[in-house]
Amino acid sequence: MISEADLPAAPSAEASPAPVAADLAVLLIEDDPGDALLTREMLTDSGISSRFAQASSMAEASVSPVAPDCVLLDLHLPDCRGLEALRRVLHRWPDAAVVVLTGLDDAATGTAAVAAGAQDYLVKGHIDGALLGRTIEYAIQRRRAVITERQLRDSRMQASENIRLQRGLLPTPLTTDPTLVVVSRYVPGRGRSLLGGDFFDLVQDDDHTIHAVIGDVCGNGPDEAAIGVGLRVGWRTLTLAGVDKTSRMRLLEQVLVAERPHEAMFATACTIRIAPDRSTAVVVSAGHPPPLVITPGRAHPAPIRHHLGLGMFPGLGRWQESVVTLPPGAGLLLYTDGVYEGFSEDGTRLGEQRFVELAGELSTVTDPGRYLTALLDEIRRGDGGRHSDDTALLYLAWPSSPTGHA
Image (cartoon, rainbow, N blue to C red; front, side, top):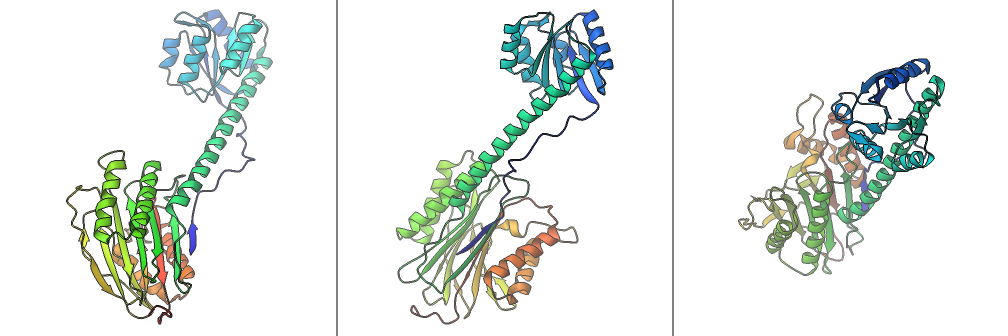
């Protein structure tokens, strides 16, 4: 099986915080008017370009519209004192650098303040403008370094999650027929670091009957991905156990209803069973687009019955099988709706019909892998990155005259 997923790359380990910019926003929380005036004068003499705001209490600072790059904090305010004042500032402005500016020359207090999250500790009367300016710049740089490191760590964790989810959503097919060609593509929604709920799978019986599924859990994110993995694993288990297709849909719906985090979540799914002689396919659709029958120069949707998606109205689904005749040398393309819900070059939605036409135009590309690549490239070219839904495709092809299992 050839499988490919366009996943967001993990950030480089060399990522570094941006340099401290000019025109910094500095918020001073100080209740003494004389100290506030002196601090402002030192800031003017510091040489850094800054926008200055001052609050005389924690309550006044909390409602300030300023988004500060640096907070200069006196620990002795009329409505809040000591490290509690520092904790409230860190909670209110988590991305700002905090410099404690106090008249208390106490090394233990300074150490405790830095340990609690402040970037530095200055004593009034022991500083000048140049020292204040350097302290503010270094404090902002250190705080940005901490934020960058945290973002890098989070991104690495997300990349690790992507790998685990990819293993669950993009499985290795269980096949025994060396002539069977299985090609897949998975494109997570743009701007999202986690895979969504699109899933697919394929297994083959000892008599060379092919079973395949493709599905789409509505929405994007870890909940949808987890449900998608659960449905795929459930489908594989039920298929290997020999459960018939309509019963599988009913049991999969029970799994979804039991595991979903909220009642609005539902999924679509399409299962197929291809006969050993590759002349027919039995299709069951739970609200999912029909597979395309691909022949050189043409693609057309398989004529199937459509029924409710899984979890839409639990217990009311009446899924029925549709028998589809497959021309010699035909292939089957299974896909999720993300492939046609994007935009075309004229700014309108691509839509199912134009997607089918495009799939037919490109079907003269005989290599299955190149065919899916060309199809996705053409869709992306027209969309221009505007669409953000997940997309999954599963293409099955075989020789026109199967050997050994005719």
